[in-house]
Amino acid sequence: SQTIHQWPATLVQPVGSPLSLECTVEGTSNPNLYWYRQAAGRGLQLLFYSVGIGQISSEVPQNLSASRPQDRQFILSSKKLLLSDSGFYLCAWKLWAFGAMNTEAFFGQGTRLTVV
Amino acid sequence: TQLLEQSPQFLSIQEGENLTVYCNSSSVFSSLQWYRQEPGEGPVLLVTVVTGGEVKKLKRLTFQFGDARKDSSLHITAAQPGDTGLYLCAGLTNSGYALNFGKGTSLLVTP
Image (tube, rainbow over all chains, first blue to last red; front, side, top):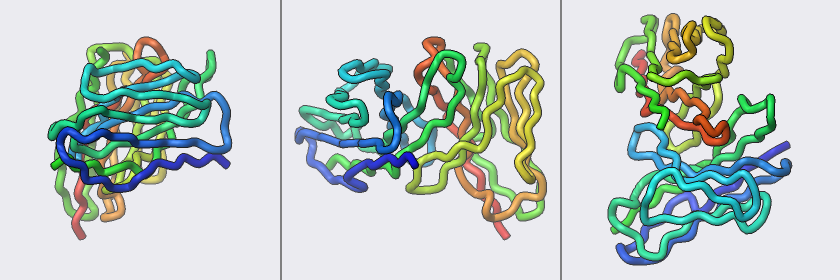
């Protein structure tokens, strides 16, 4: 069965410090991978998505970057965190194929980031 | 950007009441999905609607996709405290790769 691992679960970082959040997927190949950020109790903002190794699409200009060094690994990074980067970060994976795009997105447990 | 507007933003009802939440857009979607999220967890898929006018039922939950495929609704009959959570609708972007979410409806059902 497929599983998605996201860590750490919580993180408190000072302003100006770097960030690295990692997400790995098991049990599937060639997934589409996504990073979302969620403000408290509100909807998900799509940050980045990737349809393959080394391919990153950015949805919102910001202080963050993403990388996909391996097929099932997705990393969210920042060189210098801002207060506004605080939030709940969710990684997700989804299978995609022509004629079969309406598949379910599976989410990790999330990382609660507080920038102080 | 294909925006999804959800209403109401917050809903607090008593156990046994019925409710409907809405997901609207000015864009046409090939499909819409509904997810439910509990605090501190990732969203979990409830249903995918694909055909305009489609109605799907999941126990006490009824989902409808608008005829023009621009909107969807979720109706809950006889709500229970276990229905409490954040209900999110989502649709694929024009690229077909990315999944955009609405801002959600936060539902609280009290005993």
